[in-house]
Length: 166
Image 1: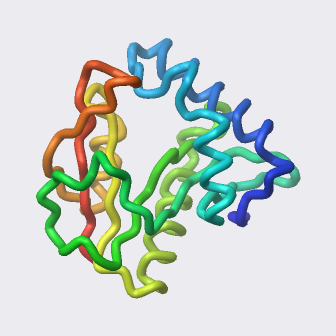
Image 2: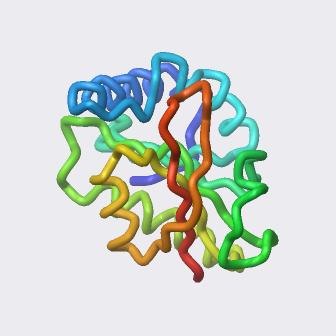
Image 3: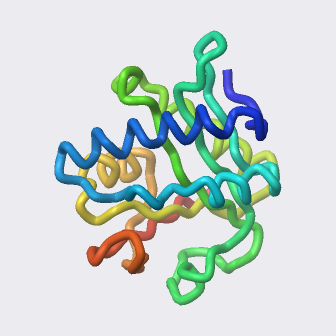
């Protein structure tokens, strides 16, 4: 079940995303760091009611941020649609023990349907240039790869921007 996250779930969310970070690092993918995703990032998501969790019984096994807020790093990108009525996916994660079961697809379906229900023109996101698995995942869903952006506090390597026109 996917539901709006609560502040009381923050520590569980942080433990889950940290488990994802550890597994990615073991595969040589340094997309997330010890400082990102941060507690402050998730607190901001919670304040804006944009953080959703996927639960298996009472356990959080995934999360997704579905936001109408455009991050400053995205402003220079030449998107396929105008910069109005867009949604942005951030911090998509599925606990490593539950990966490979279609749960990331479920979370993305949720985010894309949320955007459609709110009359969005598109869904936008970025993924780490060294994370080939994520790139294939988004491209199979119909996302178009556009430009690169940099998050210098996260990595010296670029992040690819993607957009799905709805």
